[in-house]
Image (cartoon, rainbow, N blue to C red; front, side):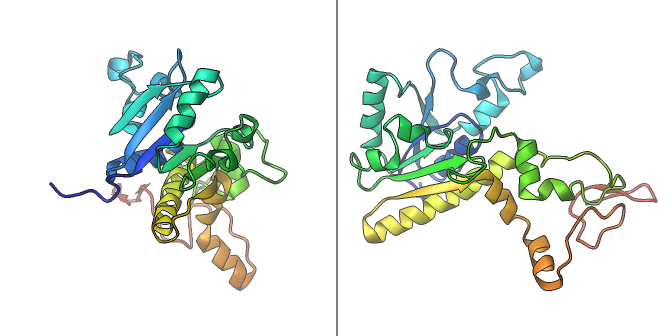
Length: 255
């Protein structure tokens, strides 16, 4: 059997939104050993998210939970309790990567920030995923896919093309706010693992969901940089390549 790319890499996941679990799912699919941490009693929020077989909710049958957590190990643990903290620190001392998506500075307030944890594990790579970054005026804002989409600039353009130019703000569909930032974190972690192989040192990675979506506006950024024109909704006609499903005049659908 062929060796997988991340075989031998150990990852601890301490997350509550879908971005971190998707990041570690990608790593698990590449062979990493991922330990998924859930709060005692309630379990992961994704366990209560549809779809469910026959639309009957069940904590072991959520399609979202099963998708995000395939190929992972699981443990229930509360690092804010003394015994839970002790176990958490033991796990951190024996993994290569920690992925967390707590509110900015919460890990530091718990005494579990990167500067604290690298004392236990100098080679630790720690990735922190937040809505608007860990610094700046938006860092403590409440976040949802809708307002992250707007602040990133994507909501200003969507849907594209659209006959409804005055439509209320829209958000990026399909959970892209979480999945795109999770993918970005995974790529950054792979780079950090490569770097550690040369330097022997771990590092701290910060991923902002807003900045991740902003980076996807590359076409609009290039247009503005070269022409000074600001992109907007174009109505039923668009100057861009059509990348979605559209019904044509003759009844056919193109993609």
